[in-house]
Length: 243
Image 1 (cartoon, one colour):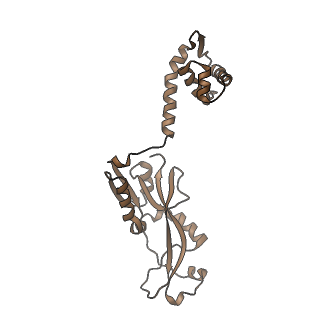
Image 2 (cartoon, rainbow, N blue to C red):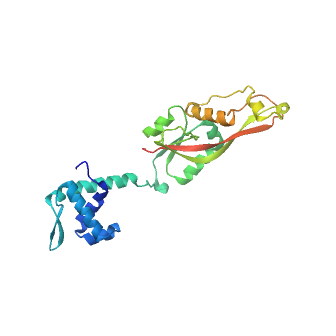
Image 3 (cartoon, helix red, strand yellow):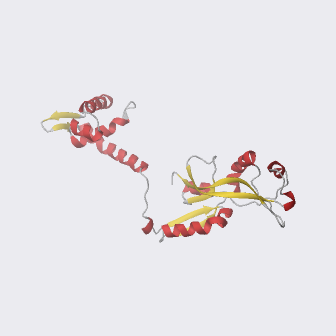
């Protein structure tokens, strides 16, 4: 194919091969017969071949057209298949579904997530794994189907993220500190727990800290402690666009 080929005209080319009639092709494309004729003229110029010759039956394809059209049809079908939305017969799907979820979300709604998945995919084998530092790559490689983590705006664009839940996080303080302002609270020393998968949201945590304050929970044997809730963040379901 020449480098200057207008690929938008290939659909017209295929329809001309199918119908052998300018008017029928125009109806299929929603354009006038004159417009189809102009498309054909451009194709002839760009492909350096008559492509079709008129006879008593309509347009007869040339030897060149007969040679290239099957490959063009295959190419168009491949593109259409790649762009088509995948559909799954949920009720009859009996394959494996692997989901990675960070521990805090596993505790909060992991059981609910598992039950809803089993209701949707009753025949499937569903596995819940811990979301760790390798999970994002495992999703890209197709080893993990879905990941559940905090929404990460820095994640590679090849990964799709969609919100599934809004989580509320808080800071635990003793009663004697209940009157402190948010700024004073953030100046206090914090005790944090390291969790697997935390590396993947390190940049996100830094951004939240910069805009909203520390995103950690105080863990201590305090009594009569009120809750001072901090930022509201989104849980995201993550999957590879190339899976």
